[in-house]
Image 1 (cartoon, rainbow, N blue to C red):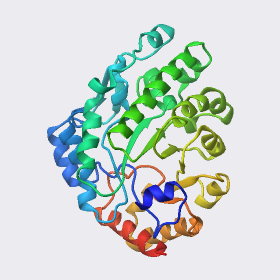
Image 2: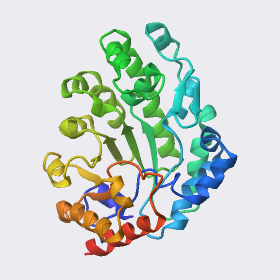
Image 3: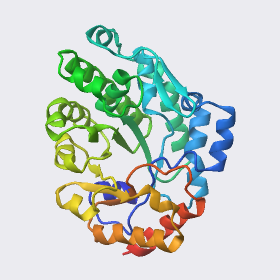
Image 4: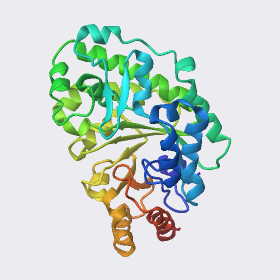
Length: 333
């Protein structure tokens, strides 16, 4: 399995390819399913989560991995957090964490009972595919930001204020332990590797990340039994710290050239980093952008081709297959 070999920085026959959000809104079959089922229902019904996970695998020959369809916030619901998805606006936390009292009220999930649908979906998908299956979870800082802000935020003012209180390490420890257990249960169910998404970490300074985030991500990544991918957006200033926090593979977003990032990430594999908007370009321009990423990777062992973030909903289906084929053809060795 070339993706797992690349994660270990071993030689591969060609560069592996997968896409963040490869199961999602750009696919007509997914849009049809969403007309009937809300996102959280899909996440918590194994047959639906498995079906959505398999949709891109069926549609795009050559994909080198599947990623289980879920949401990072499924983990916080059994901890006592009430989550609603508001159409057009994203997740909304009905009982946000404001201080020590709410942190203390968070409970440890009963993973095998309350999150069983996620693990069952993994088992179903594993029975259907020959490529690796990726599990995933949100990193403690990103989850904490949702819980404290009540949803997406522009300035993370409430989160940064809580960081300066004794409640912060208690919150992050609870989240880190829950995330770590969730990922270990995914691996036990059959996930071949897992990705830790720290979507909002790029909003922090390096000093803030080092003091208030890094120890908790490391607490997770040090204890996982399968290869790990550690990814954060807007994180060019944090690359060395992300590597220090852990991960077999460091995901790189599109805001920094891949070769510059890799030169700073000695000793790990690298995932990335085509601009997701490039997928909307005419074919010739798209493949030129792909070639630029590949030239910067320079066939070094340990490159996993991906976007610098998730596939955008407007992405043409033919562009996805074109990129898969082009990466494999150009890197064949």
